Structure formats: structure tokens, C-alpha cells
Amino acid sequence: MTAVAEPTNDTSQIPAPEGSVTITVKILRFNPEIDNEPHWESYDVPALPTDRVLNLLMNIKSYADGTLSFRRSCAHGICGSDAMQINGINRLACKVLVKDLLAKEGKQTTVTVAPIKGLPTMKDLYVDMEPFFEAFRAVKPYLIAYGNEPTGERYQSAADRERFDDTTKCILCACCTSSCPVYWADGSYFGPAAIVNAHRFIFDSRDEAAEERLDILNDTEGVWRCRTTFNCTDACPRGIQVTKAIQEVKRALLFKRT
Amino acid sequence: MSESLTLDKPRSPRRPAARRNNFELYSWAFMRISGLALVILVLGHLFIMNILDGGVHRINFAFVAGRWSSPFWQFWDLAMLWLAQLHGGNGLRTIIDDYARKDTTRFWLKMLLYVAMAVILVLGTLVIFTFDPNITA
Image 1: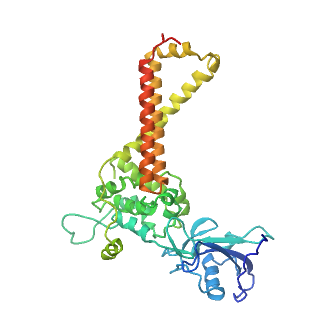
Image 2: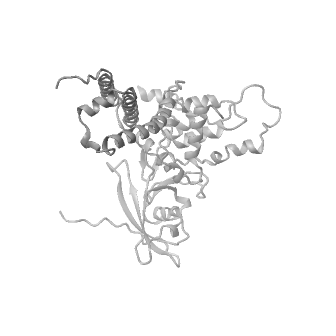
Image 3: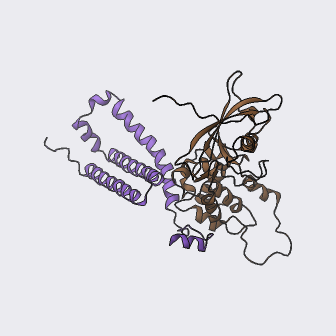
């Protein structure tokens, strides 16, 4: 059998501003109406070092292939829509700069982009997030307080607020959960993101349902399935110390301290 | 059938309610503690059996019989047997939970594991306690 060159995609329509270099973007494409399984497609895209990977994808979609599908909303690292595997690492496409991906001088740069793992791919780069949100909802990520409603605000000291400050930063992009090998192997595990959002309320002095959430996370699919591989901490685009939060929940369960 | 049910209440919780038992917590804590104990027990065992005066070449029936005449070594070996079996068995249980794709595979792999663990534990304990140094070869 003769080697067949990968079909090249026509990207000549993409505008090349001054100072741009051509880099190859390899995208794991999948169209459920045509393909049986995902396949790689390459696009030669002019890129400025200050471009983000999201710009490259937008250019491919606008000028080369309008069927390329991915989620993006705010494009500023806040909404958490465009989580994808960039060069094998879960990242937000809107927060990765091309200059950080450039190969050594004189070598062709290749950037691989694939959907996040562990959640069913629906088309190209977007996945079904429902299993992820189901785990999120299951830890009751909202304030639960009993007794009479206060007439004013629920006050909290600065130190009490600081206790769970790190886990309030979560934007539910699923970078952590879809980088977790335990979650890949068995999707019934709650996953790091759900535990982070439980942590945010367990350690909140105004919340009164810490026991309830700890019971949920003490179950078979809860925190004890965590193997502390730190993939989640590495993946988090907000820099949340995810593994530390999980360990704090474990400690609270072991010593009943919240 | 199941699809119409899902559509009926798309946001209803799909997980069973928390069972409120501490089994996973205790097995997690057991892994840490038994791991530490096994480091001492197994490395000590290897050192005595393989390195200390003459090492592996002095091991014979009389040597084992001599060791097991002391309750201290009986207890050492018994602790090593039970901790290693439960530690390894629990580790395999979590691996089966992680990687078995179907509930039936998961169930039968676990049954195989538990039966193997039980056989080895019973057999090992029996040998340590009923060992007869005057057995005729």
C-alpha cells in the first residue's frame, strides 16, 4: 500500500498580517453524521505570536471550513466554554498564546487540538457536558441555611471568607474533571470540579449543610477515589489548588473538622 | 421506555442517596496505615531472610521451624500475611472498580479476588498456627 498524503485543507483565504508565521494546526475532527470515529485534519494557518489558539480556530472556521465546531463565548477566560486539549494538555483556547507554543527557530510549529476526554464528543471539539453538570448538581452547590432568614446580609469575617477563597474561582470549564484518569476510567466518580464546588460551601461559615455534602462525598464515588495524581491542579486555568481542596475534604471527613 | 422517563424529569438526581457509611473512609485510612507497617515488616523480613548472616543459603526446614517456635516471629509473619493480603486486595478492588466496564464483570472479578484472598488468608494462618516442627519428611 502506498502512503497517502494527508489531505490538505485550503487555508489561503485566511488573512496573514505582517509578522505572522505559518503554523500547522492539527484538529481532531468528528462529524457524527458522517464519521465512525474521529480523525485528524491539518490546517496551515498564519498566526501572530500574540494570537490565542482561539483566534486560529476562529480563522479556520471563518475562512477555511465553516463546519468546524467548538464552543466559545466570552473569549476572555471567564465563561469556561472553550476547554479543549491543546498539545495534549487541557487548556482554555482563549488563554493559550501562540508564542508559548512556537517550535525552536527554523522548525515548523504544530499545534494539536482535540476535545476534552472523558465526556462524549458530540461534534469536533465540543462534548456533552451533562454528565459533568449532573455531578456538579449532586453536591448541592448552593447556600443551604436553616432557621429564620436574617433581616440583613449574612455577615462573615474576612478570615472565614479566606478559608474557601480558592475554590470560589471555579468557572466550571471541566478542564480538571476531564484530565482526571479516575474520571476517564469510570464516569460515575464525582470528579474534581464537583468536589471543588462542594468544598466552596463545606468550608463556608454561613452554610449549614456541610454534613450533608460530606456524606455525599464520603460515598463510593466520592473523594476516596481520588489518587492525588495532580492532573486537575495542573489543568485548572484559574490556578485553583484542586488536589489540595480534595485533600481538605478528605481531612474534614477523617477528623470531622470543617 | 427509559428515554421517556428521562425526558419527564430531566433534572432529577440520577445518583442514589448517600449511604452514610464510612467503609471507603476506613479502607482509605487502612491503606495508609498498613502501607507504613508493611514497609517495616516486609523490608525487615527481606533483610533477615536474604542478607543477614549467610542470607538465603541458610534457609531450610530447620531454620523456618526455629523461627516459628518463637511467638514473636509467628506474630510477625501473621501480621505480614494479613496486612499484605488486605492491602493488596483492597488495592485490586479499587482497580477493578476503576477499570471494569460492566457491572457483571466487576462483580465476578471481585468475587474471584475475594475468594483468592480468603483461601490464602485461611491457608496461611492455618500453616502458621498448626506448624509441626517434627513432621516426617
